[in-house]
Amino acid sequence: MIKKESFVANRIKSIGYAFKGAILLLKNEASVKVQLTIALFVTVAGFFFHISSTEWITQLLAIGLVMSMEGINTAIEEMANFIHPEHHQKIGLIKDIAAGAVFFSSIFAIIIGLIIYLPKIF
Ligand SMILES: Nc1ncnc2c1ncn2[C@@H]1O[C@H](COP(=O)(O)OP(=O)(O)OP(=O)(O)O)[C@@H](O)[C@H]1O
Image (tube, rainbow, N blue to C red; front, side, top):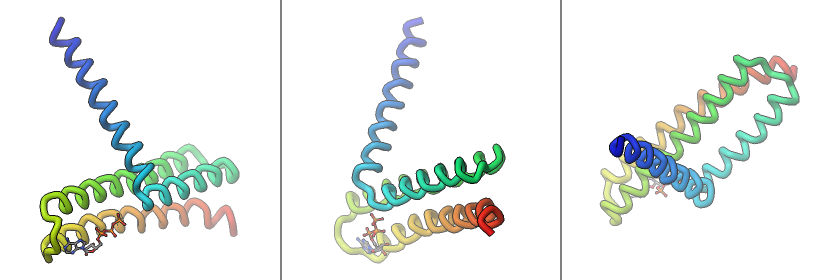
C-alpha cells in the first residue's frame, strides 16, 4: 500500500516537472512561441471553417508533433551546449540533425494544413 502511494506521488511529481518544462519552453523559446501562435491561429480557423472530427484530430496531432519535436530539439541544443560549450564540428552536426527532425515535422504539418484548408478557401 505504501509502495502504491509513493508510485502515485512520484507520477504526480513527474507531471509537475514536465509541466515546468513546458512552461520554460513557452517562456524562453522563440520558435515555440511562434508555433503556439500558429497553433492558436489554426484552432480559430478550425472553428471558423467547421472542420470535421478527423480534420481536428489530424490538426491536433500535427500541432503536438511539431511542438514536441521543438522541445526535444531545444533539450538536445541545451545538452550539447552544456557538454561542449566550445565550437566543435560534431556539436554543429548534432544540432543540425536535431533541427532536421523539427524541419520534417513542420513540412508535413504545413502539408496537412494545406490539405485541410485549401479546399475550404478556394
Ligand atoms: N558549438 C557549436 N559548434 C559547431 N557549430 C555550432 C555550435 N553551436 C551552433 N552551431 C551551428 O550553428 C547552428 C545554430 O546553432 P544554435 O545553437 O544557435 O541553434 P538555433 O537553431 O539557432 O537555436 P534556436 O532554435 O534556439 O534559435 C547549429 O545548427 C550549428 O550548425
